[in-house]
Length: 305
Ligand code: ADE
Ligand code: ZN
Ligand code: ZN
Image (cartoon, rainbow, N blue to C red; front, top):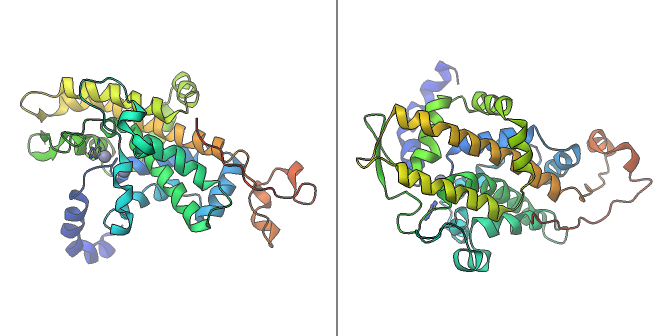
């Protein structure tokens, strides 16, 4: 934002800070935007067309923010437990029957919302919201502390002093503070750097495992290390950042790669609706699959296994 325009916003800055600070419980805005930006570069034309049809655009960085923006709206209180999955401290793995009863956790939510997004029997608004929830929750599940412990609310209750003077908590440290330390606000630049630096071997491993339960268990294993390595005085500085940022980077990259792969899989059988104005969809429709030869068929719900 240019400085003249910016001056108008100064009175709002305090308010925005208070609002964002009141619930430190998702990758912060930068984290979700980075995951979305990485995913956008990896969509098939077919998936992109389906997303544009549902959301009106293919801006996954923006779409990933919606599920946090509606948290203040009591109409969506039911979605609050869907941002995370907790398991008892002495357990290494998530057990769905115990930790995600009736699919009411982030692992269950991802599978369910991806299925709703492609379900042509559902109202379009429900499908649109389901897609935005799925985009957000795939990001959340890659933040290690979203597969944490209930007794401290995924680290939200553990006070931490970061970089000498910043009072925060363990969860927020991993949601936002460590990311911002690197990005300095340039989340697009950080997303590009992560895209460039992704080792092909790791990408293949990430894409080869599209089971949200496995993503949760990866996060869970990292969470255990995070607790083991938290200094007793809860002061984290440059050394903590240097040794932990590579993990943050890998989880953001894995989240972006898996978001794209899950969407590509989910929408693989999806046929965008035939528009009156054919030109709106023609650039992305495979040439061998024109509606004249093959009528658009109903989407089959495809869930991530
Ligand atoms: N609230 C309770 N547990 C949580 C977790 N693991 N992550 C985010 N918010 C939570
Ligand atoms: Zn969230
Ligand atoms: Zn969080």
